[in-house]
Image (cartoon, rainbow, N blue to C red; front, side):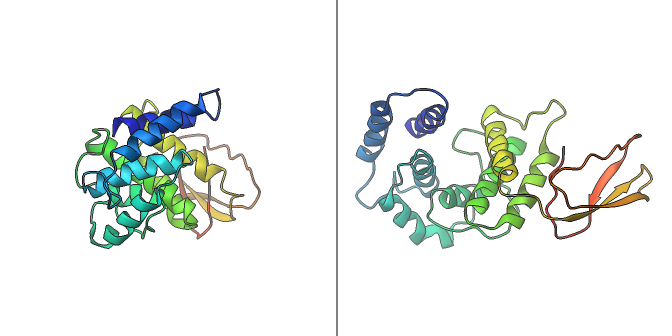
Length: 219
């Protein structure tokens, strides 16, 4: 699966810097050469989902892998594997707790694995049009961010940033009712956010609490 990881990296790089298309073609052909006749890689759902996701993200979807995953997705319980399969275009996600069953394909565990899984799920739900659940997943990512601004490992941080950027560019925010809470939990101010951007001076330490079905993006 390291070739799949490399394919994603070079495909991303090609968006901002010149990359020889022949390199991407060779990587795709290598992955296809290792693919079983039934469409899987090693008959592993997680591995097949990871490679199919890499191919699709590089603009090289693999219909055989998508079909193999689609037939088996209903029996899969691991949210990480399902998020990969959804990003590969093989299934759709439903709301759930995004806690992986084990380590990810890049070796993430614990909080980093949860961040990676949640970020992948957010991207998949945005792609399938489930914007409300996607934004909830992105808000979970903000809670999981460390004090230093990172989201754990390099890969989990990359996926978290991808999900955040995808959500931020997914159309204008919807109106939202916001409550500003003081340290003691009492509401000190209420406001309705309807414009694309609004600045709110908070002063002393406060908390923001959203009480509506609207979508609020904030920094």
